[in-house]
Image 1: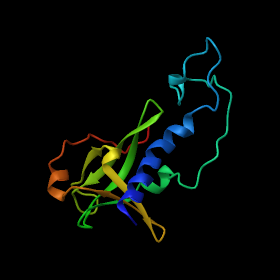
Image 2: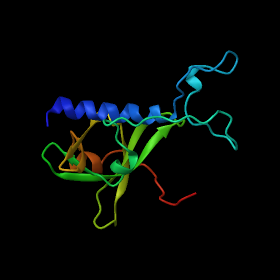
Image 3: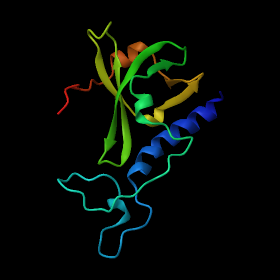
Length: 149
């Protein structure tokens, strides 16, 4: 698969998550701006439910969580643990576990999605980063708790 196709697939991944929360029509006058689109933090829903169509190029988050991250030498450098979605609208980070063995001693780093390439070979999803294990090992750590709230 060409590098350009992989980059295009990642770009589609980054824009597919915001599309899940967007409305199809602009808000009515006095009802806010188009920047108000996305999920809201609230105790009740105030916007009428709408449905969307998932496009074949869209990638579901469930396919990415648990996916192995490889470097350009095809070495396993981590695993996707979670996705960071800013204000319910935009994918802003990919939480990756690095280091450790069998879940012991691992740490977490958050990578900018624009620095990753995604591919699907024979039904297996993979992410690729231009890095090495030492760079990730020495990267700023993210304090991450897997506890459900």
